[in-house]
Length: 104
Image 1 (cartoon, rainbow, N blue to C red):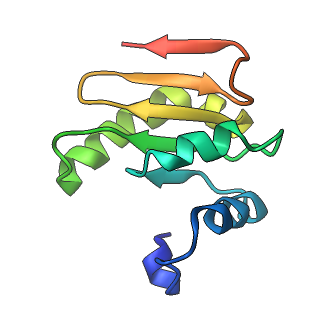
Image 2: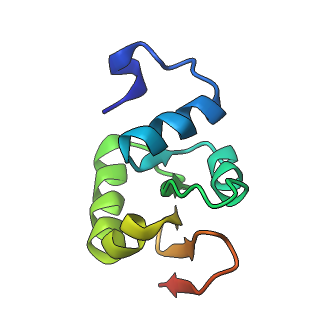
Image 3: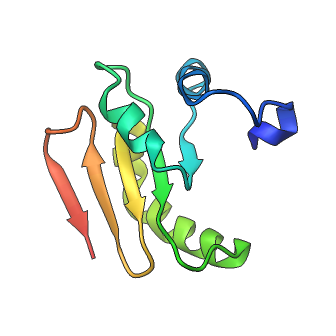
C-alpha cells in the first residue's frame, strides 16, 4: 500500500511510523530519516526497509526488494532496519544495539 493511495503522501514521518505500528506494516522508503525514527522509537518496533540505491527504477527496486525479503523476513517480523544497497543489504535489529547481522 502506498500512502498516495490513501491521500496521505504529506503525512509527517512520525505519523507514518504510528500508522505502520497500528497496522503492523513494514515501511519501505528512500527517506533516511526513517532509520533514525525507528532507532529512537523507545521499544516501539516498526521495521523499515531503507533503500540507498543509485538505480531507483521500479524493476531494479523490486529485484533488490525480493532478494532482501527472501533473506530478511524473520528479522522484519521481529523489528529491524534493513539498509538496501546496490550489491548488499545490512540488517540492524531493533532496538538498535541488539545483535546485528550483516549480509553481503
